[in-house]
Image 1: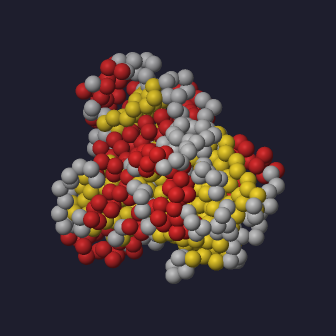
Image 2: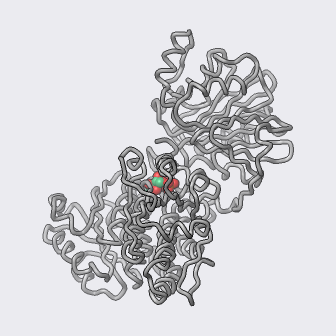
Image 3: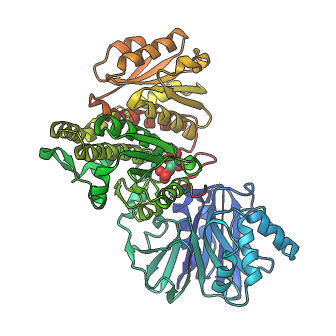
Length: 603
Ligand code: F6R
């Protein structure tokens, strides 16, 4: 959701900004821009398109300035045009600014500024920041920024440079991530660590309402804060031998299951060890109901967790769309806990829901992948996924990791309640087998690619599953329509199709049925029968050895047999591959689907 970079030091800023911005492209890729300063000379460039398409030309530019900012945009306010691309500037070309977030009261402030004589060149909310800072600028940039921010409502991470107060970058943040990378005599600015990890591993996370100033030899207002270490390698943010990050990340799914469970099981006692929850252990044992929160794919993981918590931990659980939770009037009491599920830990809708729960004095937990992210800092306790960096815009390996950890949490919570040691041990023992089972599924990649090719002429798909695999049907449909956006896909619960959507089905509308041999197998078979009777073609994900469904449908993909509650961890893997291969068959960029961005930091 827009990416920001900045550099101040002794090296030419431009190549550093270009390489950083390329790594942030997953946050938005409709347009980009840079501003760099060299004494009185400045360099400003804005383009529509992806930075990766312009990289070579950009690296040919020689501009000596060793102070600069850059931005890659995911349009929120104002169309995708060169004028709307960042950096934006004030009436006198003095103040240059990049912004991630949304100014909610921008129209009101803009109208006032127009009456005061300011001249706007773009349709964006971001430009309003520039003119507001210009209004208060009297030679000291940070003072002007502080005064301007008093009039701003909304969320922002901003980096600002002034030609009349040079040699510094002023940063400010509220509700959007912003980091400073620290190295000898130089500082880096970015929305996330991937943009700076090849230059420094030491970072400082800015806090909300903080205004910071960085200059070549110092940083102010950041002094009291501890340096944090980036704990992953740059190779994690490379494609290695894969054509796309999404494919690489799907093929990492067995490893993320392994990593999710590593050191977190005590098999002989049948318990899960989740160190991040220890400080909340006592409170958790008294919790009487859970609300799981997330958006998109993370919400589907939460829905699967809801099934697990209720069936095995006997804990009343409800999943809520994070963006709705805060605006409804949920009935909460002191024995309610929330669990926010988020890969990035920066999703504004989820973060705001966590803040709302905390305002109400509720125990707030997080299941987050990005260490040190806003949600991980805002929650009282939580578990990290340890899934590594996920760059593809579509969530894949993070989802599989979320499901694995939710299964561990089920054992953790269950064992605090009625779950027997035998049941705990059975779940954990079965979980240990999952990485190999996942590898076995991925060994069918060529076959799944062939299937994707076979089905690539269809423009509509239905996905059906029941109970644990109902959220997987939703995830399969979301992934397909998101990545292969020329096709439309819908997911539904197997029993629901006869209540309306069956009207859609005919030979031109195939259905993917997730139908492992489990407690709802017979009911799923009914749904398959209903689709078949309407001439619908079916591709089914079934348990190894199942001949019955194979004989009923066009195509099957086999997954190994496991416990019912763990089947979603396996059944989703072929669906991730199917959507990636189908989108590639349609010639689409699976890492950067149109109109989207990873990490949605606006509400
Ligand atoms: C879909 C997808 C999104 C995210 C959602 C939440 O493939 O990636 O639906 O799952 O935006 O993101 P996080 O998990 O970062 O909170």
